[in-house]
Image (cartoon, rainbow over all chains, first blue to last red; front, side):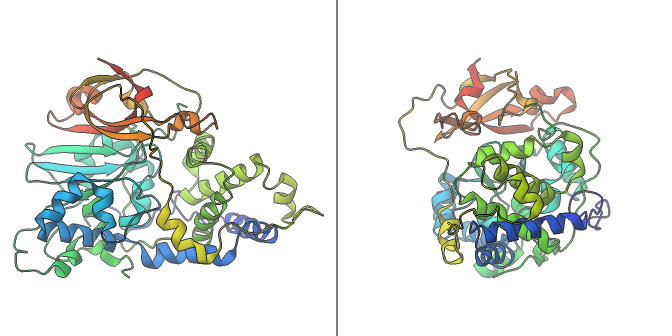
Length: 218
Length: 219
């Protein structure tokens, strides 16, 4: 990203404070629940595997690329996000009720959950730490342009910024603008350009592949 | 509850810390905390609103100090104890109480894909008359419930416009406290940024907040 953003993980408090007692507490809790017959450890493995290896931003990227190449699909997607996304087989947990908001030359959308960490799991996977952190949650609504600036995105004054606060069970996906110069790319090539950050609204899609595409792709 | 979780509009929280190539989980215990929470939800002793509220009940100083999955594990332990699934003694000893029955886990590995695919829709297929319609001017109520609410403080008392009607959904303020689902319409309400934040906000910007009928009054 940009020089203004720290590339270092926040070891202070946002994750992995690594008090080993927490790791031990989790281990103790798991063995207690397994021993009581309340939890199946293989189900835990399956849940972790799903979000580490199967569900992630590559899902949303496919949806976006389809919308770029197929006007009829885009129309369905903007009219009924849940059902249009379900055409790919994506849905369910934390994607039950989807709303897709479209960026345009004079409109930029940004998604936040000020109250907790609501995020469209079915299309983006689990949220990154910064999305769940106090700095982003607090400022995205009061100073969206400042937040976007920290991500290296300085929007002109005449671009309208729409912030979507995920306060209910609707989950938001940003449909970014298709980058100029991508006219000859295939749908698959387009999908490879679409980043998680662009689908949250903190970045635009660029022709050069972006760095946040390191998430696991099934 | 006017808790620390209701962060919209707060300042001085520091810079956004972006991590390149961020892993889904930063340590195995984070993944276990996540999965344990989902697996325990399958016990159906609480609902998602009660679960969110449990995190809000973490004391503000602890909430800010703790990492995300630390809050999750804290929440899970409280939910398990409060609903009687485990006892404090069992938590402390790490062993089931002598003579306690061994049950069968409701969520087994083979059921995980189907359970995730189904999710937990919060919409309800019941006929409820909407109190508002698209284009109508509304005011978010100036209320300060001490329990769970999804009406953020920054929007209370503010004037907005109904952008669209999402349909009928479970009402978290009652559902979190097991006082019924009280299904009602949820609207996307558009607030002009300057209505929320004054002249410092850009004139064309806006914040869209999803709001239940009970959060709104005609303006």
